[in-house]
Image (cartoon, rainbow, N blue to C red; front, top):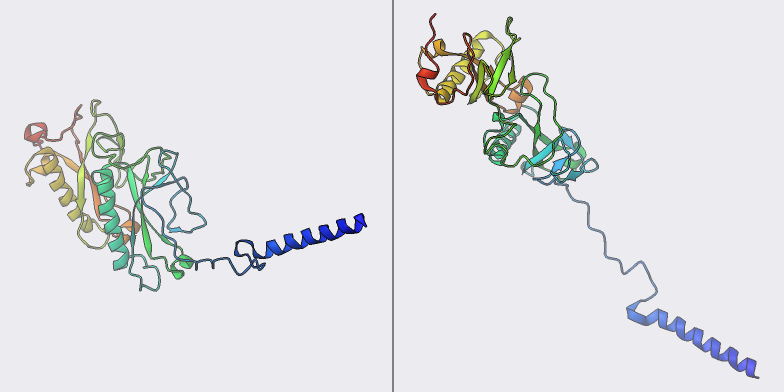
Amino acid sequence: MRRAWRAVVAAVAVGALVSGCGTAGGVDGDLTDDWAALPAPGPFTPASGVCHEADFTETVTLAAYAPVDCAAPHRVETVHVGSFPAARPAPPPGGSTELRGAFAECDTRATGYVGDDWRAGRLRLSLALPSTPAWTAGSRWYRCDLSEVNTVEVGATVVARTGSLRDVLKSSSPLRLGCQQSRGGSTAGSLTLAPVQCGTPHDAEFVGVWRAPDRPYPTRNADWAPLYDGCRTVLGRYVGVPDDPALRLRSAVVVRPPGAGRWRVGDRGVRCYLRLSDRTVTGSLKGAGPAGLPVRAR
């Protein structure tokens, strides 16, 4: 009798537990109808003011997007993220008005980010776009990326660095272009420039950037004349000498336009250098005036 009574009590307790599980907290026993629906996948937009360990790529996918703090070693820094019109059905092709407009915005933003024209330093500005699948999904951004390079001459390679480039050209910096020593130059296109301390003997110096007008990339000798004329104007202003016919007798000028591919995207910034063919100096010629850059005898 006692055993039968214990069995009845146990059965009642189990029933109570089962009944309680079915009603406590509003749980109805169906584990699938109370989950909120996942949001529909949307377009991906990268952030600005972040850095990236990997090399620059012209298209960026969400799978490859892995920003890091700029205090960590990196090769790319995003200085701005802009957007194209939402109605555009496909990424703008190279040379298009839209892509050149995006580069112009990147140019302005990068200059503001570093504190001076970014071309005044060992820097490279690049423009990245969404991948085709990302564009199809609704992404319409463009990314403005800066990288430090080991030289602004031909054959430059990207330098892995630590620390942000923000305001890096607002004051003196190892990145800033300055005094140079020319090498080679016996044949057309063979002249190279290597940075040196201004206190050591040198024969060349970076004087600034000339913005070329919207015209085809120079391919013939005659096409280069406006670039030399523009850089002479920059040179005269930098040294403090008249921009007149006698300027050719004071100093030679070296021009370094962007490559043809960058020109097609809209880069019109030409780096300009003075070059002394008859002497070396041991200081900067900025503001030196006619006494510092006298007219040479023919």
